[in-house]
Image (tube, rainbow over all chains, first blue to last red; front, side, top):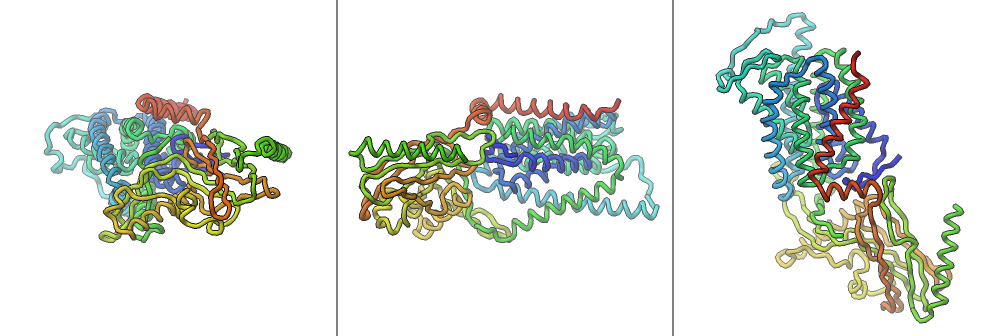
Length: 307
Length: 250
């Protein structure tokens, strides 16, 4: 069954898109990340123009995050207070990111910057996640889990504007969730992803939030970041294809529900190790494309269209 | 199958009527349709061009889409990675271009004649905006790359399609358009050549338009982008909420 996408201006197979949506949706529900970092390269691979892939992906992530947050908030796993502080940061990041996106696009360097930021962030986060989770897996096997201190004092606790977050049992500077949100917002705008794979570890290790509330809170924040990105992409570049977004989210939201069910049966460190392998695979793939000689050194972009 | 056959008989009948009723014109041609409607299930379309000539000769058909501005960029290796460096801007390039001919072009006419009428990709008038400051090799490589990338995308024809004659006076050709055909007003030019010279020419318009829901969405997205953006978000929120309902615990 074929369907014509009015904004992407191409015909795609409905079942292919639904299938892609549900597989990525399942993985995103399983790991508590949006899955954008897998979906955006996939969409470009099947021929969707990169700008449309990024814009549409933002729209699709709104739906996936809403359904994810609802599932998590029913279990009380969302810290709305820290989420709101992060949203303030991510709003600034998203607006700034879309502005930079436009400049890079005019310079013809946006594809390179997208690829580079993928390689760098995926590489660092995937690597760290793999090391940490493998270490935990071995420790639990040996049964020598070191006792965690209830509270460790670091430089971060010396920062001003401290706020209390009862749900996460934290008393930290508002600057921390603000800057985590800011970086997440930049990622939404420039990489067309929710940034969950960055937010989740950042919230655990940088903010020290309990793992149980991290996925839900990150998704809550992502709703707003992707919502703003959708609006900016739609108004500035007209690159949001609602037909494509609806197909992706039809598969995605259902996949995500099954994924978050499956997540309950999976140990945290196992899930993180699997996610790390996926992240590093995508990273290696993109890195290879950057360094290997392209089939055609030339590329064309249509900058203005006639009638 | 029967419908196709009936259409054929109809076309031939029309072509015959045209030949009989207008003996004064050296060339008459028309399209089976003047509108390519891009609907929700659009997977490309085919239009039949048919016509008649008064005197025997060669027929060449050139299909041109509306013009567009194209940036061509070349990658170079920089610190181990491939980066866009040099670029050239082409204004007024056809968004779509295809040629059909009754014989290979080089047998039909000399390069100056083909060049004058923009027949064939190598004779297409394509020059970068600042061609005066570029050396010839650069111009040629950017121009060739533009054509190669457009052919790769399917919007410039790769081969010269055949124009076939039914007898010595009736001719027809099929113009196939891909699913990513650019929208807008097309011009289909039909040339009659004899002894290497154009003796008659006729131009027929062809419109490529989105119709139905797809057209509505496209117009909405470009006409009121802010409202479109807000609605896209609301649709996504609703869809996310609806999808979570069946999984709600009692």
